[in-house]
Image 1 (cartoon, each protein chain N blue to C red):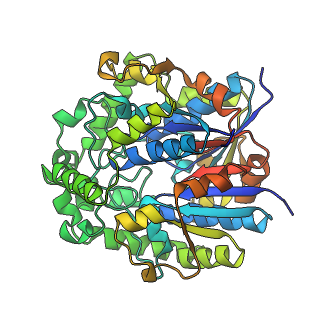
Image 2 (tube, chains in turn orange, yellow, green; image 1 turned 90 degrees about the vertical axis):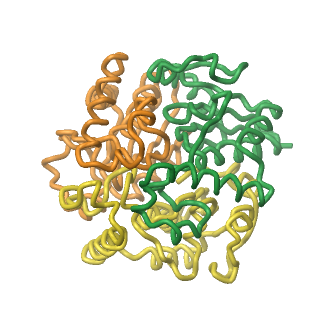
Length: 159
Length: 159
Length: 159
């Protein structure tokens, strides 16, 4: 087992960008890394009890999933109302067929592996988020607290 | 005070993504970190004397601010001319009401705290940017110079 | 020459976001860094033998290139069919005029400099990618393998 440490800042709140922090954190934790995720900006969405994440259908810095969607839906169609929901449903179905855990399950895995989840207090205030809509048992802190841990960490990732 | 170091690469040029580099850098500097930000690609926009940053209204890898905007403006409406300006004004107003410093103020705080700001020379050339439109007193250098500092830094973040 | 190490996770698959991992990796390698890039999520596109990358015309977390494109094409026009191809062609032409290497050339430079390229096996499976469409001679591994290298690296970047 490793005695290393990993600090992640999770800043994005779409379904596709929810996977990297939870996959990387749970993998590192399984390897024995002490791991923290600091959720800030749009990333605070990932701490909601009831996740309602959507694929960002337009202008994704990458390409929509599944890969073949590009051919099916030209950009102009992707702007139609309801398209985000369709693409989100397709992505979830794709993940399920491939046996990839849901974001909820990956998040639970992180919690079981004692990954420390911290909500950025400033963003909570900015977005008027009600803390009872967020997971129980998480910490609330500022950016200074992130550096306390990150400054001593072997790996730091801004996601 | 810490004797640690932080190296940031700032690559994005929208209003929402202007906050993370300046908030993180000013926080770290306040904690005593020697801090550098290397501005490259779209991030070079953050060095302009007159900032004219807009929220990227479509396909933001997160969700538009304020959070409730999703309900007000379905994706197809967000593509209408003028919508970016409306959303940008809404975000600025939200920030102001919540007492969060403007990007300009956060940037000034970084400069006062002696955060070193470096413009990527290659990107300046690529975009034909006139250096008199950028802040006075910044450095111009290449990616190799970023590694000189980052290779010795405790925390490295690609934003 | 440095004896340092750089670990990059490349997660984005558009033309504009293809530059940072290859430019940073080739620069670091030229400075003597042992360098690895772990390609995952949309970033796996960057390992295709035949790159067919496009600028993401809408909602780019930054701004479209060339910079002046914003004025020429308001957001609503950018959603029209064919616009992505036009913007991609403009960006490629701009890069060529400025003497900036193509993504293919930068990638070759990385390979010649012995930057280790690793495809995320889980993403390959998820996207049903045929490995014969990807570069020969690359490695396939999971996230745990990324941490083996990153945990010992001087610089870690999530791009």
